[in-house]
Image 1 (tube, one colour):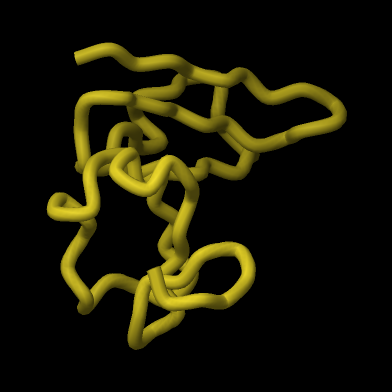
Image 2: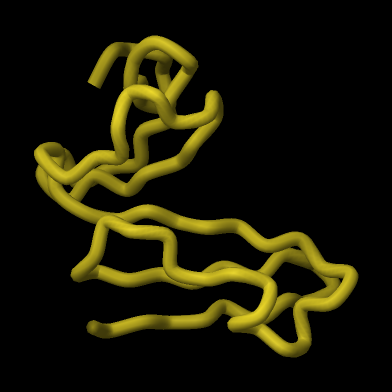
Length: 86
């Protein structure tokens, strides 16, 4: 599986771990030693069919490779940046 860690900077204090081949959480605080006192964002990536279950937490982010854009779970539906159900 291909993974990419985007290291924190002064402009972006969070750590992001991305994968183009998986629809599972990719990092925990243990995975990123330098993440102490930093924000960790878990990024889900995969096809529409592999989205996390609808019982996911509100504001869960997911990059849908079928649609080619990010979507967010609003507590009921997956929506795109404009708020349209995706």
